[in-house]
Image (cartoon, rainbow, N blue to C red; front, side, top):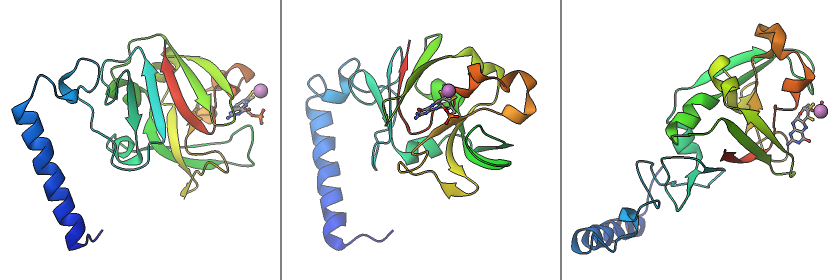
Length: 183
Ligand SMILES: Nc1nc2c(c(=O)[nH]1)N[C@H]1C(S)=C(S)[C@@H](COP(=O)(O)O)O[C@H]1N2
Ligand SMILES: [Mo]
């Protein structure tokens, strides 16, 4: 991406200001307050997923605000599976939910996954250790959009495991995911 001269100067000026603020008044600096930023990058584009609850790493008071850049910093993973709501085998791309939970230092045994349409469900964290469950960003190479199943869809490797071919797992396939609370 190309930036105008003005954008560059603005960036430089604000970097310098932040630098001075950090050097001059470290005690009063927001990022040094406990709970308002430890070890997690700040989002630089639209925040698409917020994780709160029992997490060790955050970038805002009590929560991790994640944009696509932060999410894409985790290893890419893909799987092929049929789903309950589409025809045939689909390819999904994204990241592993367990990598996401590790990124924020999740401590709990359950996650509450919440969707844009207010659907919500508790999912045992054990699922993500037992199976390569995806936080899917793409289906068949197309970005999942909020008007469909996006911005994120929790996708189980259903076709690889007989035990996942069950209604108890189907309702954990949360689409339009936008918030996770670790409990
Ligand atoms: N965002 C969102 N995700 C959701 C749902 C929902 O209503 N909204 N329904 C769940 C349920 S109950 C099931 S069984 C699966 C499959 O969806 P289906 O009810 O359309 O077959 O998606 C799950 N994910
Ligand atoms: Mo369902």
